[in-house]
Image (cartoon, rainbow over all chains, first blue to last red; front, top):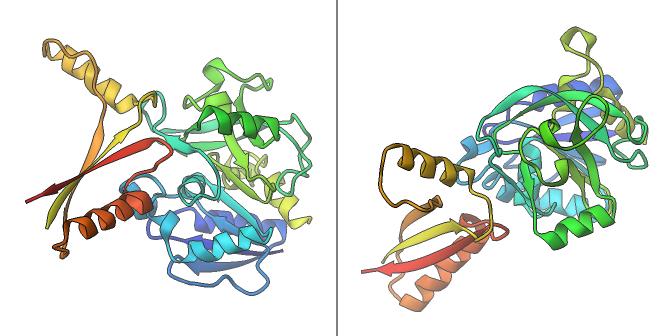
Length: 227
Length: 80
């Protein structure tokens, strides 16, 4: 598994996600937003978390139009894997690789804490190391994670089983207080129509060592490397 | 040529910032405020002198970057 982690001005989680990928056994290349090509043989592109361009204009808006995104779009169009975490998810929706938009959290506060997620399916490249319906405990750290889309898009996402993760409580029950940011249908992450692009607000790369809170995030990277 | 572009949230899109501002205005006893929606304004200067070409360039700017058409509308005003 060859992974390319893209750093934009203001990205700050590229080191952590590279560590998680290497721990799972991936070979990791760091690339810059101004590059025009991905390294040869890239299987997976990762857009890490952070505050690209200081969240100016809209979160992910300027990064979504960066030079390297043309190469990322071409990679995705050929079935290549793309993972966007937090700001990376915002970049994916802004670049048109995933539908919808991430709005300001309904409670208006930046939320930084652990959060339970329900893994909706485990037959994808990103989640095979989990069980379908498994509840995992990972971190969230965002001010704009409130996923919204039009009714038609929502019906398509649900109908095609493209919701990857939902916010839930420890028992896996969604809704109410288990939803931290007002996200429609408790959506924490979605797939593209071919399931090769995943955008998610939570940070699985934070939870890869017992020393720092748990290892529930490892499964995502292990799934990718097991391909 | 100078232009002003206003970007606003589409109707029906929840605007938590606007709601918070609305609440703050009420708490400041500003009378008669029934709704607040927050938007953005861009003042742009163009080298172009032809009105139609300037409008076309500004439309491109809105659709390529300034507005997220999933949730936002834009309005272009050419100023003197």
